[in-house]
Image (tube, rainbow, N blue to C red; front, side, top):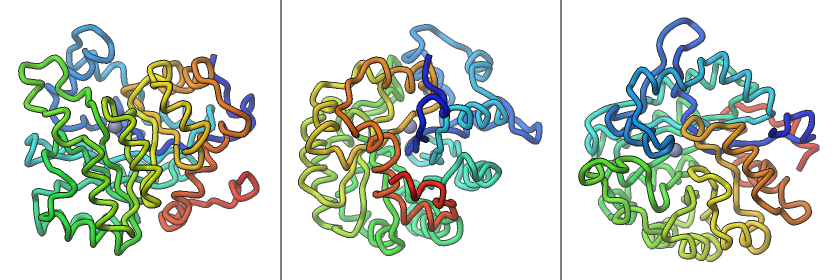
Length: 324
Ligand SMILES: [Zn+2]
């Protein structure tokens, strides 16, 4: 059994999850699906190893009340992401206001949120990114390039990086393999390697040294490249959502324990991975941390790396100050 907050003795900051995937909201209204239902169902088949209907998928999601109670019990403070790809996928999904409002209903659980924009929407994307950063105080903007079908080092998107860097925002960049489209004919049109190679981040980070970038996930099969770009570029960081801890390559665990110990942050990928059974218990059971590394990974790095953005988002970090 995973340790509760009381048993562990320190809280956790979860830098990535889809906390808007809920069966029912606190006000009695239904939660929203992430974009593209057929791909969500295929993704669920990939994770659960069986076919599920939309109703069955919904029934596995928690209600808003259940979700926040669980995150409180385990002392996990999160930064949920919005998610949209209308040009690449044709559906809107978890829009920015939906996720922003969710975080504002539970400020003790949520420390901020990640906005979403579709870079192909040009001026509208710039305006929405600016609204997220200026008005909604987003920590940054999360991208999913295989679904959104773009390269971050394509110069056509430079105005977006200028804008995000100008507001001091981060971006979350999807690294490597994605479960989206898994098993569908043609992978649902998703090209898993084309847009997920960290060479794109190496170029972007070099061209925009003020833009802070988090390479997400295991970054399979580009793990080594991801770690080297992260080591080389002072404005590039790592997080670990999107894989069971027992499948993390030794290279990642070694780098977390050594040369990248101040750069790796904890991410849950809730609810695709169950917070308690899959993630918290997995890290406790299947990974060996050197002394002091757990605290860095679970919350200190996130405070050091994202602290200015969390404060900008209105998070009260005073209880954390004594912990760093
Ligand atoms: Zn995700």
